[in-house]
Length: 385
Image 1 (cartoon, rainbow, N blue to C red):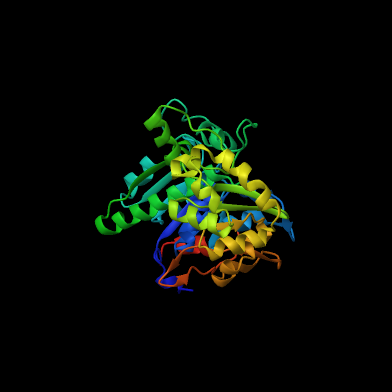
Image 2: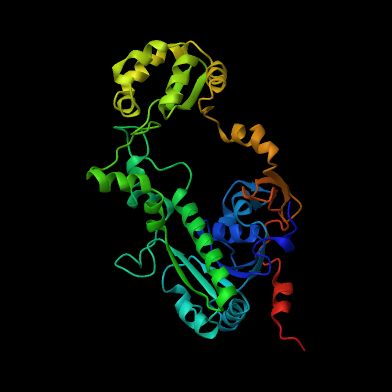
């Protein structure tokens, strides 16, 4: 692991006025890259601190998004505490916040005021719909944004009820876009002395990651449909059932298709005109699935994967999270890390997946107790005598 002093964002100070997921995830990504992230929390704390599961009274969910940060408590309803918050913001290189539009302005912590006082500041707001426009004042959660952005329209089985993606993709893709914007703007600020304001819309970010779906609509005028695990333009590229479980295979071109058929001893399928090209296989993938069903049900998942892997056909077991975290590749990369929790508890977390020059980001700070760093941070802000 690299030394934090040599980390890409070492020396960058971040004031985080965020709760729950999208904003804290952005802050953690910056902290993993070496930024000094100070999480400013209300007296009751980030509401995610109450989310189960709890280990020795501390939220594992909160821990997963708030490592490598320091925490201070400020009651922003109090004028004196607001002044301290302004002091922290002015002492920072970056401010990130995920309140509803207008909240930070009413507190005297809006981007206009702070950038006027400190032009080199990078200020980033994450909200459901962005800061302007007909929906700007509306709130939103991951579920509602997945629905409005089209993600739910292509998730699930054809003909089934709408379902959301099991992972809160709208929250986390917004946090990723925000961290990307901040890191880019910090580079500009270091070079030019001019910062700026980033406005991240969860709705827009969620539509953006559906680039293949929106381009399908632009190109055909037709809405993409739910296909379960299948692919609209490739086959076999889906989930199948073996005798003892499920697996996926992604034979997405002609070479892989030949390897797939040979591995399963189904060379007859190579002669079937319905499967003579990638587009034809996609068009007839239901028929292909019927032809393969009995073959797979006579094999175990391990037998199928062994045969396909020998043929260099991408495939994999459909893991639960216990299996995913225990995968030998994940273990090799040392991504499952032990961390201590406030109060003496110990748990595990999943570290940063980014490796730079063969090294991964260290966890140098456990997730903080509420207000754990008040004294040291306020002392740092005191003018030197």
